Length: 343
Ligand code: 5AD
Ligand code: FES
Image (cartoon, rainbow, N blue to C red; front, side, top):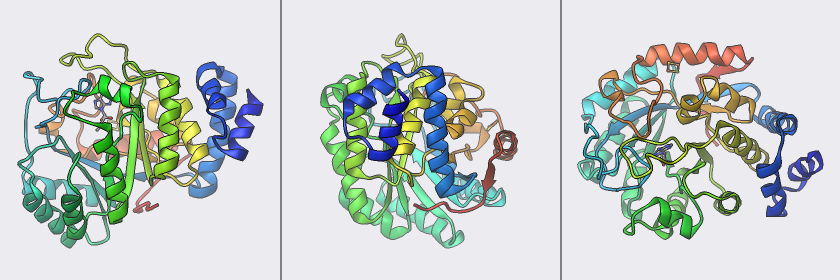
């Protein structure tokens, strides 16, 4: 196993069977060896710096019906809300006060935020916080819409591909959604000039190890600037309510493999990882992650942006999360920095 890990570090993913073996057969001792390699690579580029992205969850309305997601349109029990431009600017102001240099506006695919509305919000943030990065995570759009938002001042876009395998994609999404369009979006975003993030849920229903190696191959082809991965966490009011959630262990293995294959990529230890294990985010950083995405949403809406069950940080103020993360990160010998953290 150590030889396979050394080969991965020296030659990259030359044989997907090797990577499959690592994912499926690694024991705890070799997992530590893998994590150590990943940490070294991360520290060579980034030192022990951890970048922060303030997540503003702007809308829980969504026109899509992804089987895994708690805010899917078919979930009649989901509480819906929208943040106004003023709400969003207030979140940015608080984030800026706390030292955030990146604001991530994420939401369901909600036609209320059409290009006019969104371009207006983006350009206002650009004007008020000129040195901050603006990241959008608002789902699939046309080339023209992405371009318009880029021209308004957005710098980065997060759109997880969810799975790079056609059959698996169909098991996670209704027929009106397609992997082809998802990939088209990611390539459009790159062409326009965004820093782009793709990603997956580890342990999503029906995911095989072959699917995971296909995901890695797709990532190698796309060459994203950011990769978001976290465990699948079931949500009680979705078609996947009775499926198993993904494991922290497998997520950590994948974080390390991704860090080894993508030395410069910005790689968050996600909230989903923190939800599945109280020390999940710390473990993620020790496995090679270098980004945290604390919640900057107004506390009054946090519980309503429930993509999955038992999400953490839904009762805390933004300042509490910042302080909490600061302590957690210092406890493992890393440091939170107030920098944009561009690719
Ligand atoms: N568990 C974990 N992650 C989820 N996401 C959506 N639903 C869940 C879930 N049940 C992830 C998807 C999406 C991102 C915003 O959140 O990967 O792209
Ligand atoms: Fe939100 Fe710890 S990060 S409470």
